Length: 393
Image (cartoon, rainbow, N blue to C red):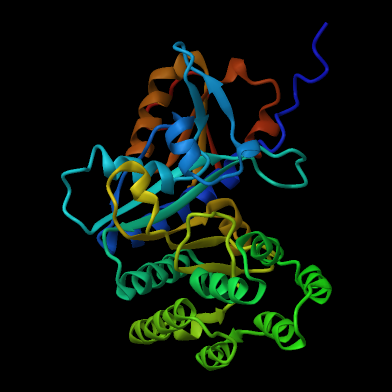
């Protein structure tokens, strides 16, 4: 008796059917082509990594890691992101490479879901890492490249929100006084639970002025003018430094001519704890979630004994495909149905058409149950049946 779950998949796992696979491949190729044109070299890393190195450095919640043991009892993880594995690679296999290093990747990552809720546990990321350059120019480059990549892939209507971890941290710590209390507020921002943020602020034992500073943080969105509004709320050197970086970054983005695609969002917080500076998210289509994100992570490579500033971004291929909303056209496909007497003729005909770039299925007539039904799948059907006729089929 067959098992009742034989057709089920683990939570968050997906099958990819031919039309979607073809569409994702086309979009992936467009993304990586743009990245290559900007001088980013393609690499790949193992699907399995050690838990004590990449698993710990990834900053993904422990309960979201897929863990298993190797034959020696070492705990392994399916890679939960690509930034930490690339940091390991740069500190080992590329330890002699001169900074800055520009790398791009196209890889599947794995994050366990407790309850599916439409969330994937396995998804493909396409992205870049720029390692060894701590300048605002590097931040501007990766944002400009992300925008150029999304445009090349066919996404017409999108925006990129830009924030700074240093500004949020400086304001929260200045107002609430310690990291533990700041962490509660930061989680509301990460979850984009602004109602919860407001309610929590009202319950804090703070002056009305400080409560007002926290509530005004939620309104710091828009163009360059948002920076002036942000300066009115901050009173620390860390906060001023973050705003100065964002001011310089805006000038870099203007030089690329892409400021129309970006907006400032000074309360932007990403889920990965290793970000240290400028962070950003890309939104497009009718999606309610970001389809791309990235930022600066200047302390991650220290964990692999090769300290270096770094920045980068990743694009969720499945979400980008959904946002674009178009199915890639398939190649012309032909079916040659043959009887055994004309097998050689049919085989030669199929070979000629394949050389012309046409997809050809070569099908023995005796292996088909319903010829008419099968024929409906193809753009053209050629029959090589019966006795061979000179010069014809």
